[in-house]
Amino acid sequence: MKRIAVIGPSCSGKSTLARRIGAELGIEVIHLDQLYWRPGWVATPEDEWRRIQEELTQRSSWVIDGNYGMSLDIRLEAADTVIFLDFPRLVSLWRMVKRLVGNYGKTRSDLGVGCRERIDLDFIKWIWDWPNRGRLHVQKMLHIFGDALTVFTFRRSREVRWFLTDLSQPTGHHSSNNTDNQ
Image (cartoon, rainbow, N blue to C red; front, top):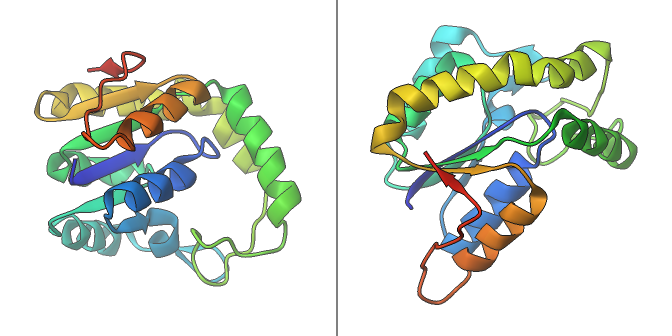
């Protein structure tokens, strides 16, 4: 595990998990939201965004968190491992509320400079619609690239905890039988 893509719905815990994996393995963590969003929530143009990710994925090791479906192919082609947080939407909605309470009006460390935490109806709808849009796209992409990858699919928080426990074992053996290796 040297090139790890952490994907899943908004507010599923991708950034937190990426930081934990990076710390455990001593691998650089890259938060895509930090790079994509410019001050005031201005998006990076798509051609530039693809170029940025192509450069990032050339590094020898990384943990990258974020979906960005329009460029997921770049990360999946370069990754050796994918961790897919396939949590129910209610988990993400609950975590969104917790994030809002703890960070409203602040800029989190995994966001772009000048992007204060905000939650609006569009963001709530994005999370709610994830199973019918984003999840299907991720599954399609994993079907395309999955044979060359080790894929861990977690549907519950406890599966993530078990994975992290396995990861911290001195042998480095990742044997959790609570994952779907697609």
